[in-house]
Image (cartoon, rainbow, N blue to C red; front, side, top):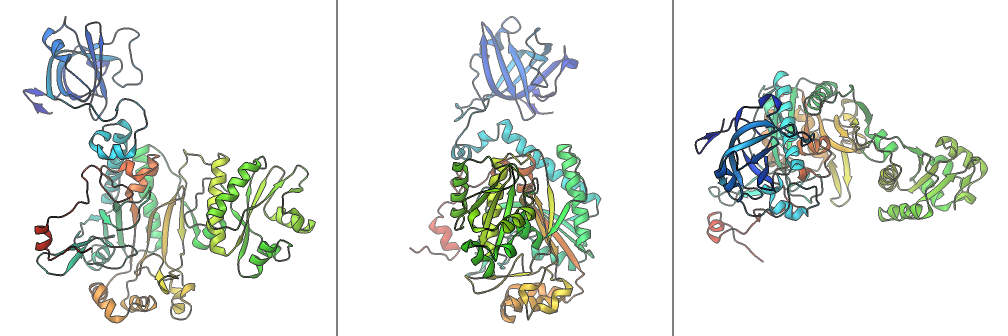
Amino acid sequence: MDVLNGLKRTHDCNSIDSSDIGKEVILMGWVLRRRDHGGVIFIDLRDREGITQVVFDPLIDEASHKKAHALRSEYCIAVRGRVRKRPEGMENPKLKTGEVEVAVYELKILNRSKTPPFPLDEDVPVAEALRLQYRYIDLKRPYMLEGIRLRHNVAKAMREFLNEEGFFEVETPILTKSTPEGARDYLVPSRVQRGHFYALPQSPQLYKQLLMVAGIERYYQIARCFRDEDLRADRQPEFTQLDIEMSFVEEDDVISIMERLICHIFKECLSINLNRPFANITYDEAMEQYGTDRPDMRFDMRFVDITDIAQGSGLKVFKAAATSGGVVKVINAKAMAGLSRKELDDLTNFAIDLGAKGLAWVKIKDDGSWQSPIQKFFTDAEKKAISERASAEAGDCLFFGADAKDVVFKVLSEVRLRLADIGGLIDDEKYCFVWVKDFPLLEYDEDAGRLTAMHHPFTSPREEDLHLLETEPLKVRSRAYDLVLNGIEIGGGSIRIHRPDVQKRLFKALSIGEEEAEEKFGFLLNALDYGAPPHGGIAFGLDRLVMLMGKRQSIRDVIAFPKTQRAQCLMTSAPSKAAMEQLAELYLRLTE
C-alpha cells in the first residue's frame, strides 16, 4: 500500500465494486473530470488501473467540499471516503466501478497541474508532434496506457515461457565493436582510448554465438538494439528485440519452439488460441506467388504466371517481357469487375508510380468474354488459356504485370494489397502467420558492385549447396527463416555457421579479405576454433509484435518515449549540441 501524507492507499481506482459498499477506502490518482451539480461536486478519479467516481457533498464534509472547488484537470489528489451505491439510474455500465461511488470526507491535494495541452478524456485527434512533445501527458490516455500494458504483458509472457524451457537470460554489452551488419552503426568515442570508438549494437548476433561456444546452450535476452537508418512507421533508431539462440538444433527445432512461444504469448496476453503448425513457404514460392518475402496471407489473390502464353501475343509489352528474360504475371481480383474507370485509372497511376510502364486489366463479362482495351491483341485461344489459368469467372477482374521480374513483383505485390483494401478482403481480426524459408544466401549489390549477405554473413548455407559457393554463389540457399504476421516480418533467424573453414569461405565470397576478417571478426573466428557447437536462433521485433497484437498503426504507439521519423525526441530536444569541454575530453572537433 502507498503511504503519503499520513494516508495509505487501500484500493486502486478500478477495484471497488458493490461488495465494498459501506467500507472506508482511500484512493489516490488524478482528476479526469470535474462536475458541479448544484452544490455537490463529482470527480472522476483516474489512476493506472481505471476510474472511480468520488463525490464531495457539504452535508457529508463541508471542509473537503470547499477544497474540492479548487480541483481542476490532472490535479493529483488523495481522498478518504465511504463506498456507497450510486442512485438508481445513475450507474455507468462502461466502468467496472460503475455501480458505486465514494462519498468523500477527507481530501488532500498532492500536487496541482497546469491545463493539459490536449484533452485526456475525449477521443479527439491530436497532432503526433504535440503528443510526443508532452509524452508524459499522452501516456495517461487509455489508448496509450493499454499499449504500454500490453508490451509489459508480452515481455512477461516471453520470460515465463523461455524460463520454463530452460533458457538462460544473459545480458550482452551495449558498448561494443563496430561490425558490418547491414546498417550504419551509432559510434561512441572513447575518452580513455584516444581516437578509438565503440559502436552501439545493431543486434547481439556475435555475442549470442559466442555464448553458444561458451556452452550456455539456450540463451535469450530482451535486448536494446541501435541502427542509424532512415525511419518509417515500424522502424526506430533504437528498438527492442527478443533475441534467442540454441545449440544442437536444426531449423525445425527452432521453428517448433518459437511457434509454441508465440502461441503462449497470444493465449496469455489476448486470450487467443492460435492453431499450430503455422503455414510455411519457400522464399521462391513467396516471390512467385505474392511478389514479396513478407506475404499477407489473410486473403488469397496469388500471382499466376502466363509468360509462356504471352510469348506469342500481339501485345508488344507482354511479348517483349516474355522473350527478354522478364515475366508476365496476372492476379485475379475475384468479383471486382464492378470497379469504375476512375478506380482503374487510379490503380494504373499507382502502378506507374511504383515503376511500372502501366497496368493492363481485363473485366470478365457474364458470358466469359473479355472487356478490356487490350483484348484485341489476343486470340480467342490465348484469352481462353489465360482465363483458365487464372481461374477467371464472370464478374472477375484480371490485372497484369509485364516487365523484369523484380519490377513485376514490386508492382503487383502493392497492387494486390491495394485491391484487397478496395474490396474489403482483409479481416482485421485475423492473425495469419507464415514461415518463409530457403532464402538465397547472397544477393548482388549493384551500387557496391559485389555480393552481399541477404541476412548477415554468419548465416549457414545449405549443406547440399555449399559446393556452389565459389562457382555459382547466387544459387546457394541459406538455412534462414523469417516469421511473417499479416504481411509484416516480426522475426528472422537462421542456423549459423559453426565451422571456421565455412565462415572463411563465406567471407571470401563477400570480398572480405583475410586481414579485414581478422580485424573485424577475429574474435569470432578464434572462438569457432574451440569446439563451437552447431547452433541457431532467431530474433523477434518486440515493438512490431506488440504493434500488431494491439492493432496499432505505428510502433511509436507502443514505445514509451519514441523518436520521430527524423530520429528526434521532441520532449527532450535530443539530439542536442555538446559543450566544447565535452568534445575536447573526447579529442573531437567540429568542422563545417
